Length: 397
Image 1 (cartoon, rainbow, N blue to C red):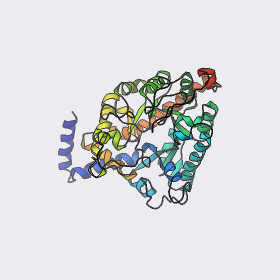
Image 2: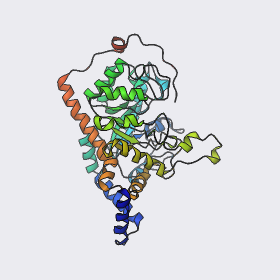
Image 3: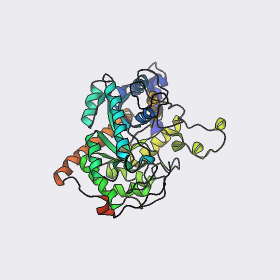
């Protein structure tokens, strides 16, 4: 069917006077002019924290000039970005006392970015605010926490981060938490502990999206079992296409329609190409992941989970190498053009670009309103539900 559609489009384009490339580019521009492209994960705040010349100095990391990383104002505009979840990541070695302080510092950096360019960015905390900022011609800016270790096993801290503007939390990073297993650490809990399930329930009650990127498949399934709102994967790809532990297995993708969740395909080279993942030779002979590899992941997730359950989460400024053809935030249109060449309709491109993400946000917000009528904020503690906390096992990266 898609081959027939592609042939039809080619025939129509041939009579239009436009080259095929021009027509695909025009279609994508039309999509992005009316639909905000929502990217699920950008690590610019961490890049600024670790900038070699002026660490943590947002003003000196001037986004009006070309930055050393993947993100600046000119390239965001060229990429048609309509909404960005800025990751307020903190590393696993910040676990324990003090993690919440580091998390607050990262939130502060993200807020300085957002408020430092009021003509470009607009603070958004809901789907309606994303749409309003897009209508004003600004890039709607949201925040996502990356790693549940930041809450220091406290639901009160979790609620405070929500009040500070955080709208998703990745349950783990490369290390386990005291209540959830990571994809890249030795299993401690067999998924979520009882306190971990309570974290998911409380996130649903607040309206904070549960992000399952970085989690073990057992954690993914446990979260889906207890979730009362759609989950997301803010920056993951398909494990059946590239067998990396950070990717999403098909048996989890198959649960997306029932849950209503969203897998936002990432551009990390080793997550989208087995050739890159398995290569162990010298750098000068290393294979490159390609834009076509990423498109293959997008199409696999669409085929298994459905068109309503796939989005984009590039992970720019959080990666040290890039996909050929997707080198920075200016290149999102190239991915949509590739999918257009493969026969994707404009309606499908709109869903991928941002409509699916906005739907998930709206459904999460509606679930939160219902749940807040049904129950009060949880007062549970990890010791109440899980008993004494054991010493953590050193985790992977």
